[in-house]
Image (cartoon, rainbow, N blue to C red; front, side, top):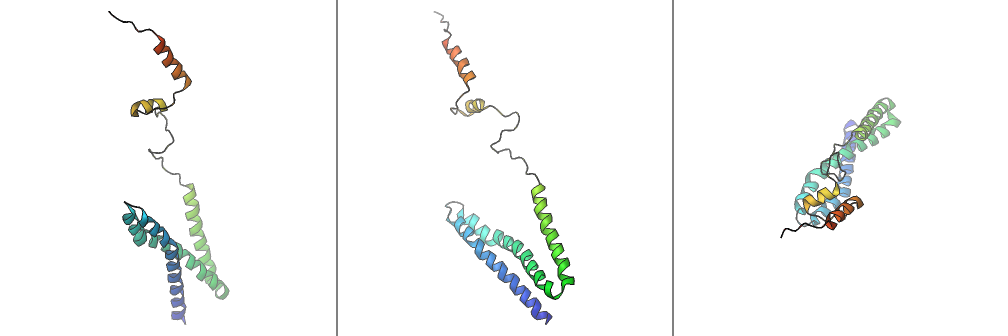
Length: 150
């Protein structure tokens, strides 16, 4: 009886794993279509990343299904399993929300001390609309007569 129960549990886990893999497979196929890096990304995602994601999703879900099924037959066993699973999921959820992302130096937001847009444009040779004060200063400089030495 115990062997049949555990066999059904493992079959349920593997069915859940394979169903999640089937759901994720179109993403790996979509990555294969990208011209240059498609085979590298798609192959890696299909063979390594997506199975890890599928196990990460299938294991807690199958544990949840097993413990809910046990709730009717053995509440003394299933209630602690549900509490532990809920605690782990809650910890992961709230831990993920409380972790602040590291600042990326390539982010579009300017950190303190970054050059003004017109300074960056001059440095890179781009044409950027200058503020009115800069345009007025440039107009005054161009209106001054240049002294010519003959």
